[in-house]
Amino acid sequence: MFKILLIEDDASLFNEIKDRLAQWSYHVDGIDDYQKVMEKFAKVRPDLVIIDIQLPKFDGFHWCRMIREHSNVPIIFLSSRDHPTDMVMSMNLGADDFIQKPFHFDVLIAKIQAILRRVYNYNTEATELKTWLGATVDFERNQVANEEGTIELTKNEMYILQLLIERKNKIVSRENLINRLWDDQRFVSDNTLTVNVNRLRKRLGEIGLGDAIETKVGQGYVAKEQTEQ
Image (cartoon, rainbow, N blue to C red; front, side, top):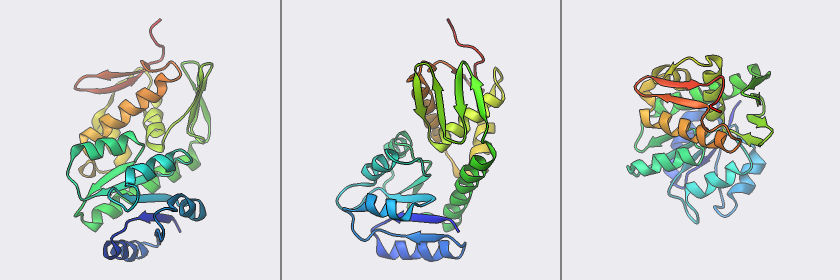
């Protein structure tokens, strides 16, 4: 049974989500004290976190930052606001998806299932190490390391990198990436993929591989087999 930590202060919505997820055999925990979110996170050790943006004490962005300091657990944001910047900020902070309220519960379930299937099936299968551009890519630990250092990627970032490395020096279309990542492109915006790739490129830049993923305008992305000297 997958454990989900639902950080939502609307009691009515919390109970409705919890009841719906229970029908799919998910165990849902909530927050009693919004000053002790991280304590509850450490106690529950969830497989996935769902966070509302507007919360007492601190907003959801704050708690996403705190969680990302300790864990790469998948995170889905909920928001009743319709600002595009909320989605961009969520992705930049390491969230895996963003759902705007009001939402259809079938969409929420589909997103949860896709993320859990991708993250946990992927982790159990991709346990080998790969070498790419002189760096060691550890799929199990979500790490990339070379002489310049070691970076830790989110689940989405690592999965994107894996898909690109599988086809080194070949173009992987945006449509292919979206379908592989989210199973059904109706449930994801084109902008979400752009944010994830840009974030991955920025992280790779920390170890001198910022130019290793090339954008092919109107086509997709390429993981280079060698970088420019």
